[in-house]
Image (cartoon, rainbow, N blue to C red):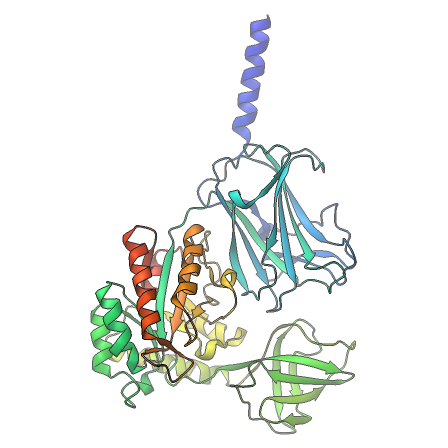
Length: 490
């Protein structure tokens, strides 16, 4: 009888164990797109909310923060995550500000107990963020308290916390999913924008010797236009050598103007994001459209009431007084049909010259985009669109372990005259460590850079050699945009 009892108990245990799901390769542990998740019992922030957002995610936010205040959501298990050495949080954001800190808990206790858990509390602290990305969470980076039982994870908690106690409320986060059993091949995409002649004269020989293909994002009107640009024959040579030629509009027109909005009483001031470079031609009385603000009083048509040089203008606004607007704020510079025309003209130029491999890939001039531009690209059937970024590494990694979730906002690491190969290769190694893709782009190479957009030849040579050695060691692949995209799910 005792043996029978032990056998029954053993079979029951095995059966219970078999019922604990394993998400499988690149599998979802929690799907936050399936509906609204309630705030967890630990939430204590004032004005906390968790809603199912129209973008198809669970939005977690709150309006004020005091000492020890935070909020978040929890998802009940159990799951068998014992095979997963790498997790990823698929998450998005509203703004480019840096006030978000995300804490993830894997809990091994029943109910709301916290005797045994593993946590990571430094995700995306103090860096500007793209609209959506997969944040890698190596299991080795988690801090374990008590005893970890990865074969039976009872629940997952994801918290939204201010960076400092008493700081302003953190930016909202949009949760799409938590992914386990992550496995992804590290890849680097090395690209050049605008077709500058130094790419052919200096970068191409170095990359060719290392058997590294590149990607060119070109404007057809400028090719062969001046001695500083590549000729059509040179572009064809690179294309024949395996380089991709992708779309950067026919004439490099700025499609939209991103900016910031400050407010004093009923007067709002829109200032371009980069006053040292950007200029905007407006006049008093002009009717301009503002879009992308989180606060509805700023969005929509606005009458210009004053002009401040070439970089700012004012308009009157109603509603609750605020110090500033948040969001991906911009004012469109071109009508949608004009934007479409400039993109289509470049596509036609590529077709006429036989550059067909990367017809469906785009880079925003100056990296500037808005929802209207993205909508045009979607309508035209583009598969990817790359922006720019000069923030720390965590902004550049692009694992997308669950597929190419947001292909129209791909960030990239920019090469400048002050860029050193060692710093770029450190980012490459960080991407290798988590199986991520790293997009790198520049404008040119020069022995003695006369422009901030030209990387020194010696530093670029060291970068290429570092990529070659890591590729030959089997640590990564160097791809063009079309081969990189073809390896991802639609």
